[in-house]
Length: 170
Image 1 (cartoon, rainbow, N blue to C red):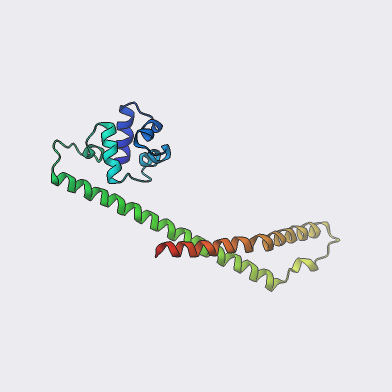
Image 2: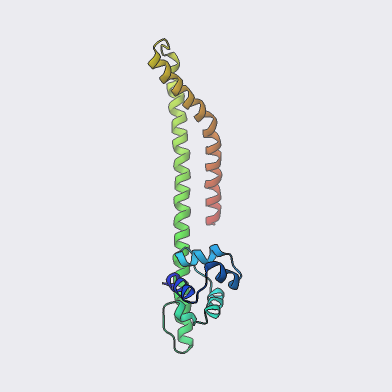
């Protein structure tokens, strides 16, 4: 609702995202994120937006406010708190997904290394006089060669990523 209100009022005032960003002393991408609902402005920024739009903060939040009362400020504060909690939950969920993706990547790479070690590259013993076997053997060898060189770098990056996401939790 807040994102739609910011976008609607901005357009009704004839302002572009860039013009609004300049008036608020933020980058255009910040305004774009507000309008897409990817982030929300903090309380001070909401006040600045309302001043630029010459609109009460309550209107930005979806209410028609006649007078500014203490109860209205509490309601606005409660709504902002709910929005901030939702954004925090989204951020936490994204971190968990990233962390599990990185853990899965490490497990898959380790499993592939184990399979290659157990099989001891059986295609090296193939009869390369047969053209089909030769092409297949070269393809397998190329893939294994590439995997053995790239996988350790990816694994190290994934392990670092796992530790960084764990560190951000605490």
